[in-house]
Each structure stands twice: as structure tokens, then as C-alpha cells.
Image 1 (cartoon, helix red, strand yellow):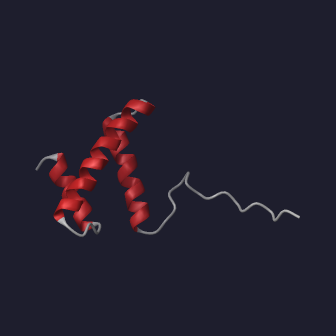
Image 2: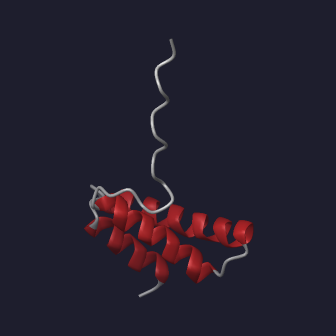
Length: 77
């Protein structure tokens, strides 16, 4: 099974409503992993691992490390 098929299957299990949407999501993951690898000097495997970790946190409704919201600003008077 190739990477696209594996990612499509994963996206489907994570809640993509259709096979077509799961494949679109998988292709977007592949494209973003390539972009991150180029932008940040990561290996493609490390970039994909990062994206899949973000997906797993999001699926569980968690805020991934590094994405915590900043505290609200005090009210101005």
C-alpha cells in the first residue's frame, strides 16, 4: 500500500465523510509535508510526523504544544 492510500485510509478513519474527501485531505497532508520539509529544513518523515501529531491532537480536541492561546488582554478603561 502506498503512502497516499495509507493516508487516505487514516483520514477516513479519523472522520472524513467520503473516500473522495479523505483522499483530498491525504493529498493536502503530502503537499504540506513537502512544504514544511523545504521551509524548515526537516526531513519529509519528520514533517509528516509533525502533521500527523497535530491531526491526532485535533481529533481528540486537544491543543497541541506550541498552539496555546495567549491570555486575554485586560479590559481597557
